[in-house]
Image 1 (cartoon, rainbow, N blue to C red):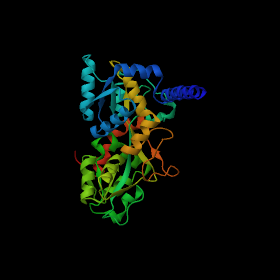
Image 2: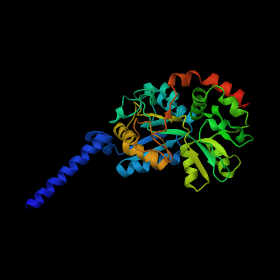
Image 3: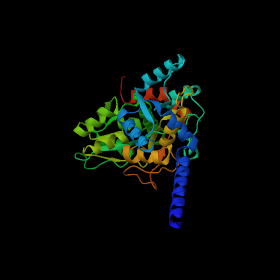
Image 4: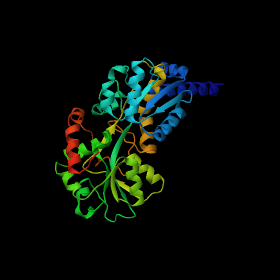
Length: 340
């Protein structure tokens, strides 16, 4: 009898600890219960659909009661849709996630006041507004075709070496979007004003986006390319002869911005979804399974080839990111002889 009582007490304690742990990570019990009652949410994203499908599956392993309907569109189209629906009072999004923090900042008044349970764990410079959070963070690596490159680069400065002259290096053009503008800004501010000119003199092959650049790297049409690490990782998983290094001068990162619209029909499910994405569990999944980085002050995991004692992330000052963009991109175009 006593054993049964002790066993029951242990079970109750275990359940209580489980609830407490879940509350600490994902929100208070009343939020979780309310989210389960809503049972669904609509998720607007400009991220790759394949990535977000995997994230949703992982979320549903933890919270199978909540159905996530994803609406994916390219960055500009998604912003236009969001604005148009909001103006007509027909916005159906419960969560909005976008890679361009500047565009999201312009929409800040359309979002609810919101903070996750672990808000203090996040870098303040990764956020542009208290209502918007960096659940997704991507970062730049230097990739190379290991079947062709016998003396691989070990740093960003190596990408200006004369031995890589003659269409060996390829890169996504700086004006293609916020991620590449971040890389270009890092090059100029950290590697020096002469970096672009030194590299352009090598004869760089230009690409409109990461997909064709990474495909060319696999085919050997180019041998080296700065690429977002999650793109590199997808090629490595497919068995391509692609290796990578993280530049010791710094790893430029791009935090996304996401929040809960003020008009959300399922605000509790929306907050629980973002809470999970921002939790240590969610960030660990994103880093280990999808090759993202994290905007947490102390990430719960690191990507392959990352030495926490040596590596450092680099994040642009947001006011400079917006203020310098047009003028510096014009200079970049001239330096690389690129015409849009």
